[in-house]
Amino acid sequence: MGASSSPPQSSSEVVAERRGIPAASFVKDVEAYLHQLGLDVNSTLAFLQERLQQYKVVEMKLLAQQRDLQAKIPDIEKCLDVVATLQAKDSDEALLTDFEVSEGIYARARIESTNSVCLWLGANVMLEYSSEEATTLLQNNLENAKASLEVLVADLQFLRDQVTITQVTIARVYNWDVHQRRVKQASSSQDS
Image 1 (cartoon, rainbow, N blue to C red):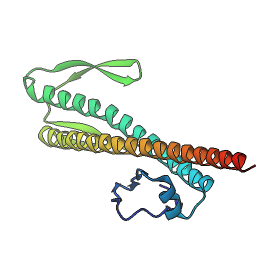
Image 2 (cartoon, rainbow, N blue to C red):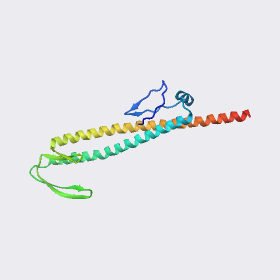
Image 3 (cartoon, one colour):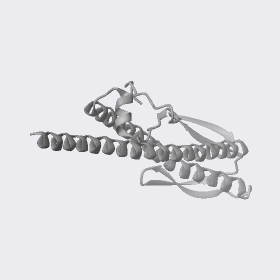
Image 4 (spheres, one colour):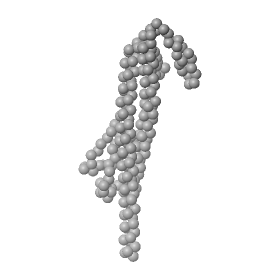
């Protein structure tokens, strides 16, 4: 997250963290919380707002990673299907197929009998694999992508919980401050 200092937590609360995302603590007693921090209401609200913004930045990054993985999984599955089709075809006859050269531009190809395929690895790198190796590699990549997606979904849920807790804490601190000001105002008007 950021390099900001974090307020001390009460000893009764368990501080948890998930993959570098600090856990927000629910504040039951605002006055005790402020006293424990040694901060005034405005400083506490500023700290909580900063933490909320940090959570939002992390959420945006995680959502971008999630979108990338959700786009990557169908591509891997499509590649697995193509490799399976090439493995299943009759070795004597050629396979006629249309393939995408560029977005919206297709070409027709005649694929002769082959036991190898070429896979794009990224960074303008393509390697030739045997069909079995390609299937194994693609299945491993698919499993890893699905596992990463599950972890990301869990991280996003944890993060959303922290955002909610922080928003509730901000509201509680603000409402406590408004209540205290009204009590002071009422007591000062009764004294005069």
